[in-house]
Length: 129
Image (cartoon, rainbow, N blue to C red):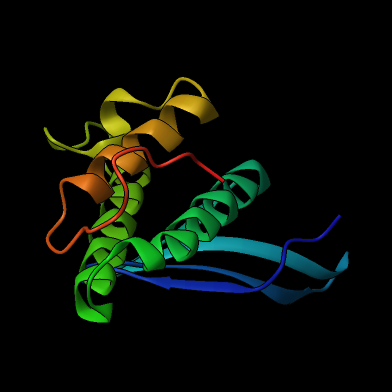
C-alpha cells in the first residue's frame, strides 16, 4: 500500500513523501527529511506516522484565531518532528522526545503543543480526531 504524497514545511526542515522511480522495483514510495546540507530517508512506517500527525495538524486549523498563528504551530511541530529523527538526542522541549512510545501519547503531545501555542482559541477539551 503506497503513501499519499505529502510536503510538510517547517522553518528548518521539510518532510516529504513522494513517488520515486526505482530501477529494480518500479515506482517506490520515499519518505524523507530535507534540511540544510542534508537529506535523511525514513522507513515507511514513519511515513504513515507523519501522515497521521499532519492530518491532525490540519484539523487543528479551526482552533486558532488566525491562519498565521496556526501556520506557526504547524512549522514548529514539523521542525520538532524532523529533529526527533535527525538528531540522536533531540533537544529538550521536543514534543516527541518524551511522548514517542505510543501513537496515543504522540497525539496528546501534539494537543498540548497546540494549546500552548500563540493564538490557540479552541474549546477547553480538544478530542483528537
